[in-house]
Image (cartoon, rainbow, N blue to C red; front, side, top):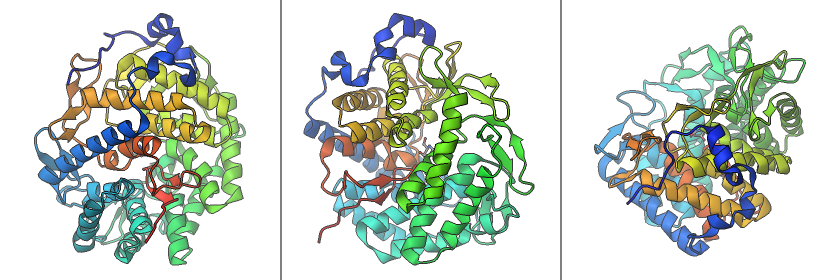
Length: 470
Ligand code: DMJ
């Protein structure tokens, strides 16, 4: 397939001067964008076909391993060398179910029942194990009703709990050995501390065992208690002393990003008014001290105590924030921020990982097949019903298909500014949970998804809104 035409090295500033309509217009009013987008049912079929293309690539080259290397045909152990959790299978489970690929669901759930080991002698990153494995098993259980998935989920969560319970502050350690319970990693970023209340809250409800949700809530409270007088939070904490080790408020960028997302979503899913109030408080502080209308609607990194600016960096991971702003009630700002990201998408075809929005320089030209931009498209389309969000999501999809599709599936890129783009050799597990799912749900009118109440985790796991019949 021919790569999309992309600009040569241009700065963002030059780009915004050259294409003001892209960086300043509403996505709903982008007529040129509509050209070339097939009807919704056709797009849904295209997305499902591309998902299957990558799924078959994984099955052919790496079935049972965590991740496939679709160019070389190799595989990758995501959590610990020499150990597999069948990550891509767990990640894909609810996507396969939503796409009504029932034979694949059965194969995948059978593999998990027979091979998934929740207690190997391996050190895992708690955050990744929660959002990917605990979340994936939960969603798989909620979609299929297979009790073994909930059993494995609970066994794994029990092995992760020492990260929380052995901490003197309640702030979780970053790593735990699933067999021995040994904990490690005392300096932890907020996303890793706070992105667990959806999974642990759901597990507590399903098992009627409050320990999981209580651990998650205690961790959140320990962070909120350490906010500055401006209401801002830093980036990393020492989980033993409880002191900040990095006092930059870098939200909504990583490694804070989903900490904010789970404040809102935790309030919504669990009906926890305290989480909702914390979301509002931190969001108000971020909007007051970090919103930076420099060329567009971006968010600067600032000192959490004084609000003084430290950097003007944009991470692709931060593009989820447009959707979160919308869900949290700041819809106009959500539209403005989304439009800024859409301008970048249209400039590059495939988003680079990190940019400096002051100088316009690309700081990392990688693309890790990340889903955050299209996650926002999905959220804002659900909120507003406006077709402009589907049009921009379709352009995102087309950019990936034209540039990152290989015979063995879809791969990350080393450099999206090179022509043609320089490709890497990995399909990250989250690909099977996120990008194709958001796109499919936007276009498919999927009968198994409750569009009104459906709630997805930060890893795209369906934690509420699975419509099961029969
Ligand atoms: C995913 O694992 C999740 O979306 C997480 O919240 C952070 N981003 C990665 C993919 O980019």
